[in-house]
Length: 494
Ligand code: NDP
Ligand code: HEM
Image (tube, rainbow, N blue to C red; front, side, top):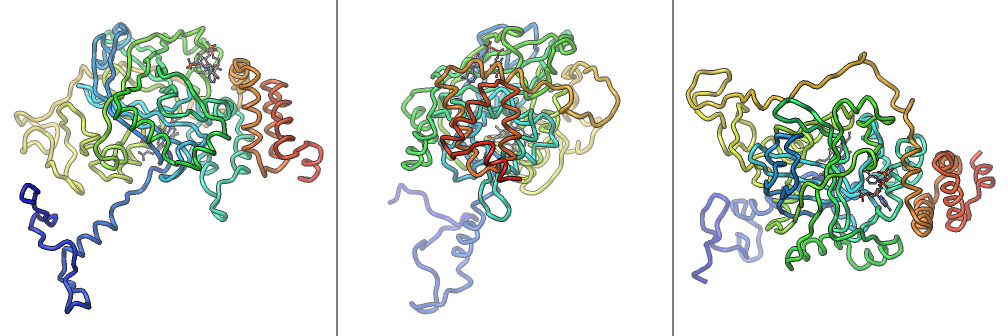
C-alpha cells in the first residue's frame, strides 16, 4: 500500500476514511460536519455540463497533418507549407442525437478538426458531406428544431422534417446524400470529410484564392443498410467508439488524403452557380482536387471528458494565410461556436489543455471566472493597450489579411430566388447505379412513415424536377413500405 499516493480532499488534506460516513452513533444521523461527504455529493452534482446543442454524440482522437504537396503560391499559412507536420485532434459526431444516442443512426456525420499550428489554432469544422441542408443562417435553428424532439410528444417527428425540407428545396442536395449509402458509414474511418464551405487562401503578395478542403478516406467507403444497422444497434450503441478507439489502440491508424480545390478570386463572378452557396459543390471537372498531404489519427485521448467532451472547435479559428469567404452560413458560424463554448464550457474554455494553442498566447482580456493564468499581456504593468510598457504584447501588422471586395445594397435578398436547386442533386443521382438508387428510394420511404400526403406530394414535386426516375422510385418504395398511393392519401389529407 505504501507505493500508493495519499487520498486527499480537493484542498489537499489526507482522507482517513472513504467508506463510512461520520455519524452520531452507528445508526446515524449523519453529521453536517462530514465535509468530505458534502464535497463528494456536490462534485457529483456538477459532473455533467450541457451537451452540445447539436453534434452531441461524438468520438475523437489525436493525430498529425503532413503536407507533401506545394500550394505555397496560394497561401502563406505555415501549416500548409511543403513538409509541414502539425499535431491535431479530430472529433466525429452525429448531428441530431443526444449524448447517449446510438452511433449507427442514419445522419450526417460531423468531421471537426483542430490543427495546433505554430501560428495559432486552425479549426476546420466540417461534415462528411460537401454541402448542407440550408444556405441562410436564419434557417439553421429552424432546421435543427425539426431534427430534435417535438415539444409535446418528446418524440422525433418525420412530419416536421419533411414539412421543412419540402418547403426548402435547397435541402434536396444534402438529403439525397443523407438517404444514399453515404448517410450511414460503418465507422468514422470509412467516410470522407469536407470543409464544405468556401474559404480563402492568401499569399505574401496579398493575392486571395477561394478554396475548398477535402479529406478522402484511405480506408475506403463502407456503409450499412438500415436493416444491418438496426441489428448492430440492438447489440451495441457504441459501435463507432469501439471501432475508432480499438483501431488506434491496435496500431491500425486511419488516414485521409488531404485535397484542395482552388478557384481564382475573379472566377467567383463567372461560375453559373454561387460558389459561396453551401448547398453547392464546385464540380471537379471545373476545379480539380489537388492532393496536398495526409492526415493520420494515431493517439487515443486519456480522458474522454477532458479531451473530447471539452474540445471546442470553431470556424472563427483561422491563421494567417487562411480566411473566410462571403458564405452567409460561414459568417454566422464565426459567431455561433465561441458563443456556444462560453455557455457550455465557460469563459476561459480556450485555456483548457485540449483547446490551448501550442504557441505563445498574449492578449489583453482580463479576469473572469476560473481564471488560473492571471493575465497574458507579457508584463504585469501592461493591463491596457496601447501602452509603452516593455515586454508587453504588440500587434503584428504583417498578419493582416488582404482586403476583401464587397459590393451591393444592404437588403434581405430572397435566397430561394434565382438558385438552381435541382441540377447538382441530378448530377449526384446520375452517379448512383441501380442498386444505390433502390436503397436511396427505400431509405427515403422508410423515413416518411406517418407523414401527411400533402407534405409527401410537395416533396414529390421536387424529386420530379431532379429526375422523373427519382420521383417514380420513391413513389414505388412508398407503396411497398406504407401502402402509400398519391390519390388515396391526398384525398384523405384534404
Ligand atoms: P464528378 O463525377 O467529378 O465527381 C463526383 C464525386 O461524387 C466523386 O468524386 C465523389 O466525391 C462523389 N461521389 C461518388 N459516388 C458517390 C456516392 N455514391 N455518393 C456521394 N458522393 C459520391 O462530378 P462533379 O464534381 O460534377 O459532382 C457531381 C456530383 O457529385 C455533385 O453534384 C455532388 O452531389 C457529388 N459530389 C461532388 C463533390 C465535389 O466536390 N465536386 C464532392 C462529393 C460529391 P469524393 O471524391 O469527394 O468522394
Ligand atoms: C457543432 C452551430 C452549421 C458542423 C455546432 C454547435 C453549434 C453549431 C452551436 C455546438 C458547438 C459546441 O457546443 O461546441 C451551427 C450554426 C450553423 C452550423 C449556427 C449554421 C448557421 C454547420 C455546418 C457544418 C457544421 C454547415 C458543417 C459543414 C458542425 C460540427 C459540430 C457542430 C462538426 C461539432 C463540433 C464538435 O465536434 O465539437 N454547430 N452550425 N455546422 N457543427 Fe455546426
